Length: 433
Ligand code: IMP
Image (cartoon, rainbow, N blue to C red; front, side, top):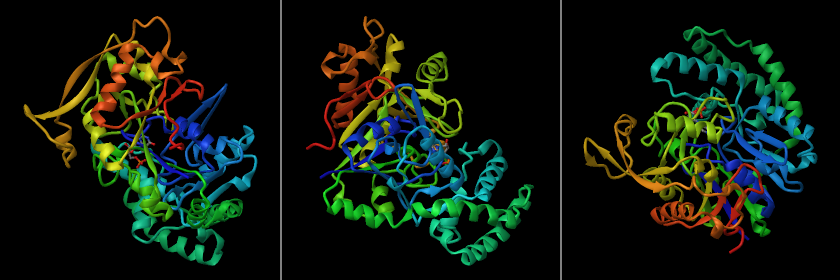
């Protein structure tokens, strides 16, 4: 039975939340494998809209096991708030369905303060982080100074670890001109949350390996996108984790041979939040039209997203990094507002063709995209959000999809033509061979 990994192929915000929610219907287990509360996954059905930062989007499907994997950095405040909000909305009413890795590193209040302090000190060179403490938490993890969920189970050890960490953190905060952390308060807050989190903690790697052996369908949910990957993205304007499909294996501790399919999600155009190079960005009114038509405001921070044409150069790179074998194209309906579309098909630097993605963001920022025109479907008399079969799409829309699929040499398996579950064309179910 298949194990399917879903990843973003752009700079995040590709619409993975809706895709995961849809595919969760065919899965037994949904596993979020990286990132933290920097992600915001929006799912709409009927009049209900759910935004989750940490809990897998499949939580809205009764009976599914939802798991938070070891590489996710866990903000206890946000997690508890999310559990409460989901339950108040009538979702996740069986708490035993949620399992959280006892290996997750905790995002504590000082990580968020350090995130803010660093961003302020960078001035114009800021990354534009979500200020959710992700970078500082993962720094602590790599420095072997992190506090993990399992540490919540052992009070004296936790006290010692926190006291040691806070000494250095307070020195840093002083240096940045920020108020120091009160260790007593921090300890009391952390212990309070520990009480409420304990029952969810488990060795989830072992559980996922067992479920795989039993032949269950596993859906791995990625966060952010390939171009925000710490190693392969537009460094330093990236997140602090590995966002590509392989990270599902390192997070859960499963063999890469056990993954049957990588589903790459891409928006029909491109957006990015925060700073960093964006070759096909639109700086004119067309960017604003996309922003308004697509509701391109961050689900996590509310920041307006930068908008631009589809970038096939970055997408080819992302497909290669992930080994994507199935494409989900989202927000196709948003492009209905244009008479004519453009697609980035190559990069040029100082008038010369540029093969591949340069390592230095300063170089990528100077790149000129080579844009190809594509016909729009503005004159189509109906609304493409009402279409449920690929063959019924306007001729120009089909050509646009063929261009993407042809350039990337990957078939289109799912097309999203609106935010709700119903507004979807499933060409092929990725869980069926
Ligand atoms: P951080 O992950 O909060 O450290 O932010 C680093 C960069 O990644 C910033 O440009 C953020 O806007 C971006 N980023 C982080 N998470 C997401 C996401 O889920 N969607 C889109 N951008 C994100």
